[in-house]
Image (cartoon, rainbow, N blue to C red; front, side):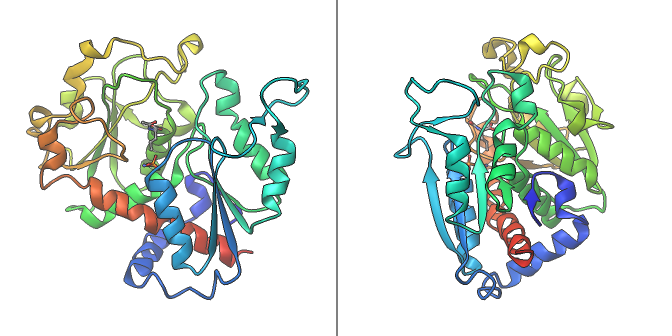
Length: 323
Ligand code: AN0
Ligand code: CP
């Protein structure tokens, strides 16, 4: 594997899920694969899970790991070509990327949507430069539009906890005070549509996700209707994707105080098929989900986060095998 961005990059999902279980059985059986190999993890944004789980996965494989927080201690990076660099940015991404590539064998990058320009975000301007100029395999640790390590961990969690062959999985928008990216819902939709599940998305009007990720998905604007008979509820906030109104890209469309009905509570969970609750974390309690739902025995948020180590290990293992 040279790039890990979309669901297709992992190939057959049955095979990938079986490999995830093999990793869980004994995660230290491939220590030889990573010997004298270095993973470089580059963070342009904060992280708890991605940072820890990906380092752990690399160490399980016997790799060395270097983590760089670009905004803490590295030079401020210019990303636009052609600018006269007389401001606060001391280095250009076009030098920094090949330099970083020279110190490692694989690179993971986290660079969120900037919400300055929809086109730049949706064309993956930053990550594509890493692919083009690093000379290394690149895996996405949440880019402007995707978070595939999360979606893969979510799929592993659903597979482990499903009670029927083809569970109903509902992804619901929930309120949040700030503008959040669409990467998590985009990837979750992409992976669910490729998996063997009955997938439904529910959100207020105006939050329609980009068709490249949700083509063919059922959208139900009535949240209660969507929740009927659900086996899994996946909550997430996202800002306006700007599909119908590009000028609203990245905006919070309504004052969140008026949207609190969308917060996942016992009221909605009561009409599900005793659904399990999922969220990628970090989560704001009593905005996205009530305390009682996230603390209930049906909440899988902790095993879901633990599966981030597993999804990262499958991806790193595939990259090491292809070096
Ligand atoms: C990020 C997001 O919504 O994309 C990261 C989630 C994994 N969340 C926040 O910035 C709070
Ligand atoms: N779910 C997730 O990616 O968490 P972090 O932002 O803490 O890495």
